Image (cartoon, rainbow, N blue to C red; front, side, top):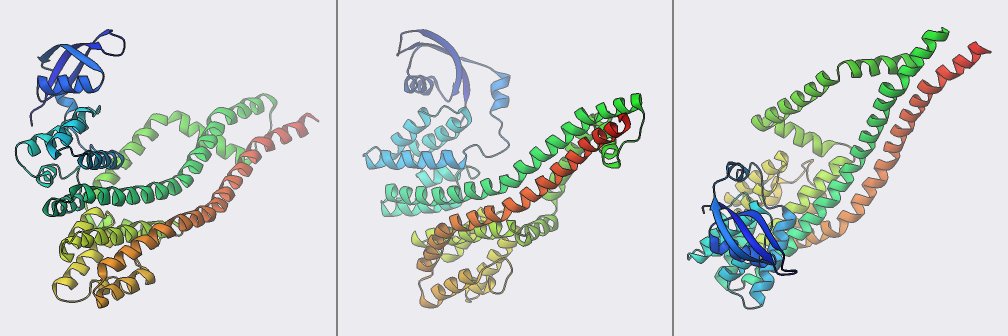
Length: 407
């Protein structure tokens, strides 16, 4: 779908004020509709060429975030329940979207649906924005005629995943915040406070304590080489990202370390095992074959260790074995996960057992995350206290020594 830039002159319906602006869209009709949805009655709409607009349409990462996707699916399900046709619903949701990049994608979906494609096929044209699990679920909904019900299930699934992800992210941010504050205070002391003692002692004479000299030397080095330090950090980060993206062994090693890390490893396990259980459960519930369910789950998991486990599981299913054997006695799995999956396979109720596992992790996640926060806080506090004591010594020892000399 081709997108163009437009200038417009419109009357604001709220107060009658004339406003001018710029926006983009596939046609004047769509732009007019978009303005109306946002409380503006178009008086003039004129197409123009914009290099900035063309560059702005180039995206390097995912445009529709998880939160936006959940909101879109909720609105779509609501419109379908109200009796609105799928093409009209897609048009309404695209027209009311204020984010240009998101609106562009949603209009692409609308045009595909309006031209006769199925909704699932329209989503397939944007694989980066719409996960395969969503497409598979919608295909089932279209086949059974229960699309609005399937969309509700999709919303529930993505909301559960998003909630768990945000809880884990907030836990992981805790040590980062502590570390940033500690480093910031240390740099301020070394760069801003310590140099004053050097001038004082040069005037009065005397030797500075070793810890103070260390802080002063580090502060001098930072002040003198601040630009080089910053550039060096940026280069190291860029090299690290490049190496990580190009070498599978590096990705696998870091994934393995993440699982085996004290405290944080439990978070990694919780996140990945929960996603595997809930995704396979949702796929099987919507009558997606097990092999395809495992494949879709693989594409949702980022950790390379769990990806390899899913590859083994898929091979087991292909050869007629139980997929649970791929997870048995593996450091990245848990006993409850292995046993419940195995029971589900032996009884022919794998979907039900995986759903029970998903519910178990959903209920257990809050408890585990709170336990991990409780375990992290003492460690972080000890680190902060040690740093504060060192800083106090670095600041106070010169003052005490100076007092002794003056007496």
